[in-house]
Image 1 (cartoon, rainbow, N blue to C red):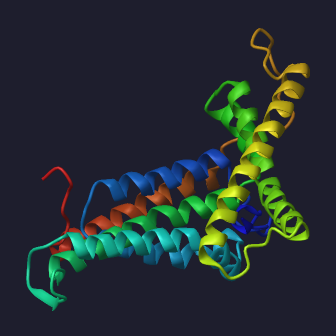
Image 2 (image 1 turned 180 degrees about the vertical axis):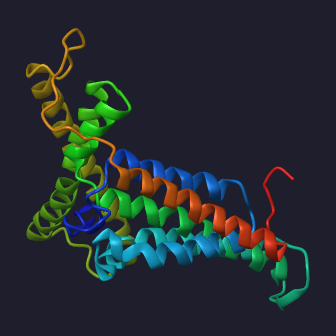
Length: 266
């Protein structure tokens, strides 16, 4: 559960100083660009651009790799499924009932690169954005209901507590002699029990928080709220969005130039 702990980026990094709405828009541009093609060249070029721009986020690479291992596991599983399930093309390896073909490898590479190109900006944007600034920007710039925006803020603030609950309950179970030891089945059963216990604790905390927020007027809809922390869109914020559009355009242009661009609706 350490993946839920904050990434603690550098607050003075160029990306951390940008408007949260601009960062979300830039990540959405990348996502749309990846949905418009199925080839591996476009996400590959875009992923290279993202890696080159990564130092601007203020997030340490070692920390990012350590916290994002579930993404790597998911990508590896999808790649394996595509290699096994997709047929056609030349046979690269014959394993009896399973044949690894060129189309299967190409499909797996395309899926892996697209997922990485989409998830990397999302993880970095979430890490380089203060939840309070995000809620203020959603209300001021996109005019979302304050009830929704500050509810999302409360949820983001509670995510690190899930990690703390997980470690606390794990230590409590070991202290009571409920440690699974080296048994794989015991570890699986213990994992399910921990997940259920953390879920119960999260639901109880959420109910208490919702009651507290209602008591403080967060659910009121007939009042005009003032702005304590303005979130203006500056020139650098528009440049960030333009940079995302340019990166997607460059990746698409390279793919078209080499003849590999393949839209999903073709």
